[in-house]
Image (cartoon, rainbow, N blue to C red; front, side, top):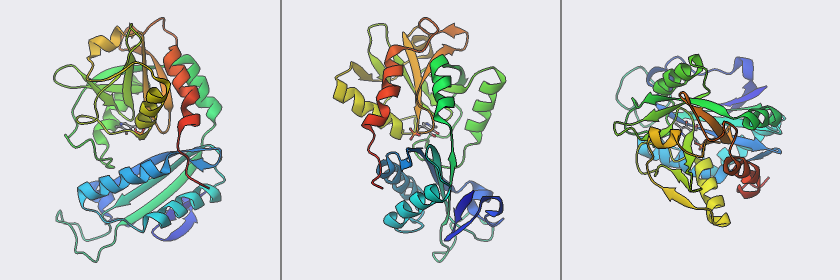
Length: 285
Ligand code: PLP
């Protein structure tokens, strides 16, 4: 395997950043995960738009021109012979003697890009059964709209889920409304067949997969409400599912001890999953 690190393609096993990288010391950086499908990077333009926004919010410079970054992403996918899988990209504020203040302007951001294969049949097998989630009190900072590498709360929530036999943790806020998953956006389908997801204005990351699902909903004319929903409402929903670049639309069949619908993946989630790759705006290769 090959990784791209600060201007060089290096063997993955030797890929490393400096001990004084601010990503390592302060989690002072941002990232993106894109799906690779049939050798193409899915929704790359939207991911790069969001990367630019995350960088802007933290006042980190682009590590290179956007066009060059697109090229390197494709090159990392190509060199690793990834047909289906993910490409990971991380930008930090750079390497500088440890000090909380931003380093001087001549410190360049660090950039790392890796890619790895994943067998789509494995994810499809999981989707055919559906996953369990457990609820977990929201304990993250308010700027979850920024896709930072500071993921310790997400790590703890997801580990809690794993230790309780679930794949994902669903955060709930002080009003008992679901915000999102540890690494996914959260959705339900009501008994009336209305798709519901929380507005992206607060409490969640504006998922790229979420935005593609919104496009499909509009195209297909499905019933939809963008509003907060409670843990209680989710447990009584007809369907539930999560979305992320790494999982697409993944049906949820259990929330805590509550069985969702008939305990099998719902038809809406399953259809959205099937339609997904006809709707995405693939990067031109
Ligand atoms: N919410 C969180 C906290 C995430 O970490 C992710 C993805 O990693 C998502 C939502 C889904 O975003 P996307 O669809 O862009 O992968």
